[in-house]
Structure formats: C-alpha cells, structure tokens
Length: 474
Image 1 (cartoon, rainbow, N blue to C red):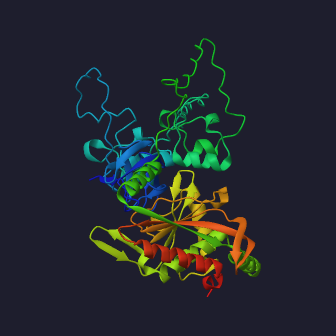
Image 2: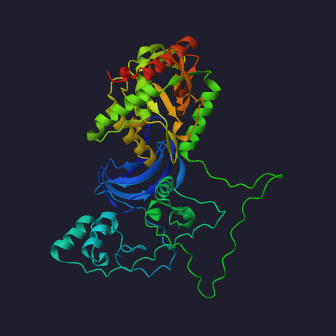
C-alpha cells in the first residue's frame, strides 16, 4: 500500500505554503532524512526531509505550486516490495491474433517492472526485456533483477540516448514580469545578479536556484534563431497608464509578504496603540561600548549599539514587569523572562528573530547570537523556534539616518520599542547646556494590556539604563 506524503506544517502558524522545488523524481529510492523538496512557508524557504523510506511513485503537486494547504497529499511513496507505479494508458493498437499464454505486453517504458527493479537494472546494465517476471501478471521485481545479476544472466542494456534537455525559457525582456522562486531571488540579490539576464528552466520559465547559481555574466544572450524560424514577437509593452496615472507593473506577493500584510493590518485594526517618546543621552552608552569592544577584541567580539539596546529593553522589562505582558481575550499573560524579538530586513520581507533570556545573557553572547540570527534571516534559513515567541520587540532604523518613528505592535506582544539615529544636539547636563548625542526612542503599547503610567515607567527605565549603562553589565 502506498504511503501518502503530505504538505508539512513547518511552523505552528503555517496554514499553506508554496512548493518551490522538488529535489527528487519519480522512481528515486527515498531514505529517512533525505531532502525531498524546498517549501516556502509564511516566514522562510525551508527544506522538507523525508520521514519514511521507499520508492517515490507519484508527484501530485508540481513545483512552483502556490497555496498548497497543510496536510494536502503532495506525493506518494511505495514501501519495499509494494512498488506499483501507475502505468500510463497505452495507445490503442490493433488486436493481435490470439496466441497461447501471451506474456504481458511491455509498456511504453519497457517491460512491466517495479521502480526499484528498473533502477537496479539500469545501475547494473541488465536488459529488462531479457528477464521473466515473477511478480503479479509477470511483473519484474527487484528479486528477478538480483537473480539475473547473481547468475550473470540478462543482456547488457544499450546505453539509452540522453533525453534532450528542455530548452530554458529566454531571459525576459525589459518591462516583462520576472518569475523566480524566493530562494533564487535571494541568491541573485546576494550575488548582485540581474534576474532579467537569467534564463529560467523551471515550470513556465520560472527561475530556480540552479539557474542563478549556474549563471555566467555575458552568456545569457539569446541564441540566433535557425533559418526559417519566424522572428520572435516583440515583448509586451508595459501596462499603459490608467486615467492619466503612471505606468506600472504587478508582482505577485510572496507568502512572507502576505503574512506581514495580514498581521500588521490585524494589529492596527484590533490593537489600540498608544505611543510614548523619550530623549536619551547616548554618550555614556557609547563610551561603555568603546571600552567593552577594546577588551573583547581578542575574542573577536564587537558590540553594536543595537546589542546594548536589546539588553537595556530586556532589563527594563524585568524592572517594570507590568509591561512584560500580552493580551489574550479574557486573560493577561505575565512573562517571567524577557525574550526580545529584533526586526531584521530580509530580501523576502521583515522577520523578527528572537533573543531568548536577553535579561540574563551577557552582552557578548547577545552580540554573537544576534549576528548569527540576522545572517540566517537574510539567507532564509531561520528555524521556526528562532523567530517564534518573544515577549516584546525592538526595531532600529538608526542606520538609515531616521530620527524618530512609531512602530506597529507585533501581536500578541504588548509593546515594541522603536529607536532612530543618535544625533549631536544641545542637551542640559547637570544644569549646563552641552553638546550631546541624543537618541529619540518611541514605545508603542497595547492599551488593552498596558496602562499609560506603566508604559511611561518602562520608557524611564530604558532611559536610566542607557544613561547609566553599568547596569547592563552587572
């Protein structure tokens, strides 16, 4: 009996996904742990490992299929001794004259045989036409091929003519929509490759990972058409302006972008936000960072301002536990540790890897872990446990020169801290006006779970920890 391979739930929130690419084909022998496919979830593109063993007999969902529901059957696997690939219906032929005890007619692919038998025969140069099957209706089984190998029987099968490789789709002309898998887009962005110059070999000309990895600049030119071949038609012109508007092109949303849109719309529509902003003198924090980096240099650790802000937010949440909460209908969850979700801009969209136990971890550990998680996020390799959860979030746009902004809460969390760039400006220090590096920090709070006074206490605690940063290292 064949085993159904179903679309896996690669994260607790996953309801459907895109089957980006099959890494196996019908007839392959599958072992537990083999990578069968690449699946785009609502957060990242992940590899799908086989759990069972057997021979792949059917692929029911072609690669590139979007919106495949979790639990849907995507392929079938036959256990050893039960392989039975559905045979294609043979073309109608004139009925031969009856003969005594006819042997089973060979299919279009040769004599009837199990996938394992075919694979074994091909590997050992055995001509299946020379064997007599002992399986049902004369079907050749693995044991028949093994017997032929052991006795030196069978006829060496002639080397099959290689099937002509499918012609890759021509690179799209300027203005045409480029169809590419999310993984291919990420690799192209990392390598600085223009996808418009890459020819896709996937379904419907879709550009897949191998196309990008095998791309050589200067070799993407369209080959000259053969004599007598009609000249290709001109590419479709960009969409015309509508009612005087600007021309535009349309791009299908990735699963990640769909989830971002859905969750943030839900947040703004259902979560009553309120915002609190405070100015923080950053000079003491910058001086501490300079000293710590000098002492950590032999260990290869370099702290960023963001690493220190992660720690400051975590410690502040433990000092003001009324803000380390989340709203759940008729209950309020109070968390006993601070897990900080940190916003990272990845090619597929915004994702928030989580630094767990940030209130108790050392700064060097936070820095090392954050660099690792950020790199995995940009490469689309985060595992579900690395981006799920979190009791509060931090979003930093200071590296872009943004002075101040308000962030959208990431449900079901109760707050998010948004920080901009530190800027030199006059600041009162000990009753005197001095030049100082001032950071504008804004907190967005869920008013269902957090009162205004509690939010103000949290912002004040963050300010105190940044302006007296020794509290971050003890």
